[in-house]
Image (cartoon, rainbow, N blue to C red):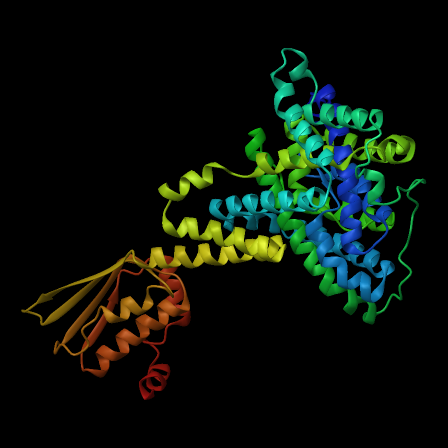
Length: 495
């Protein structure tokens, strides 16, 4: 017990605390920006990021992963807030939490195995592009000072780690933020700061029960939004978990993560915060800054609240250029540069899935749409490919006037037409044997194709025998097949 506690919480204290500070600094402008996107007060996003980061540290299924208010979730809240107000958003947040907990108990986290590597790569690349694009407004119609500060920030981020001893001891994003803030204050630069993003809260979050009528009408209003938030939140969280798994060579508990995200969102809703989920950008900042255990997520949440309440006078002085530099680092680090080289080496279908995922996510700014498009395309390509691995050969025995068809491979909706076309129904033979000992029937489309073949041969006057069905195929054929059921065959032949 103590050994497990030490491993998951206290095996990397210094790295986790320093990473927590960097993440907290980067969370502040993002939480404010996402609140503005959703159309709510900045404190709604800040309270959400604090609460979700702290709660998920205890109940999440992935150490070192950062969760909070996100842009993908904020985009789904806009219409609800505009038409019904904040109270309905808080109610939708609570329902989102309940649905995510239910998803955890139903073990829906296991559905991630249906998401191919090409979809994950496309998702990651699209997110990197979105993160970079989100920084562009801060670099447009500004003075040269902003470009100079951003360039200096990137220089510090990438060059500071090269300094012996000190470079590895302190996270360079934190040094970037501290140095640029000091320079901006010393030179009294007239550039955009965190304070320009919105007013920071000056009190601790308090318990809030949404003031909405507890009736069916309210449920009908919030349910569509809650379902959307649930799907996007879990998708982004599961994707982030996969990426952090790869970065740290460790495994996450996805079903526990589903429940954890749900509990965190319920906590957020009860403290006046919006729904959130795992954040790929912040999680990568955390990992690259040295965060590894649950302590880093807890530290990020606690430092976020402390900074907002205690260090607000200093925080508002942080130039946005410093945070833009950090987020550009995240975008560069998130993008899978190897995927560009792999375009020449990987199969065309894999490349199409990856590129379509990127295009859909970037075009819609909705991660769920991109992943759905990628998964559907990958499934279609897979079905088409497997459908080609089906072969029907035949041999004729003159003595018994028997034509034997040998079926090899997978028979399902994609290959059923090829299966039917492989038989010569016009051949005048007395006996037909269909040998399925090296075939497998997967669905009712395949069963219907077998029925069609048997009935057509019988219509031509041949005796048909089906042999060699394996147990699984025999079960589905016995249940749904009609070629051995006289009444059903008569109806089929009538057509």
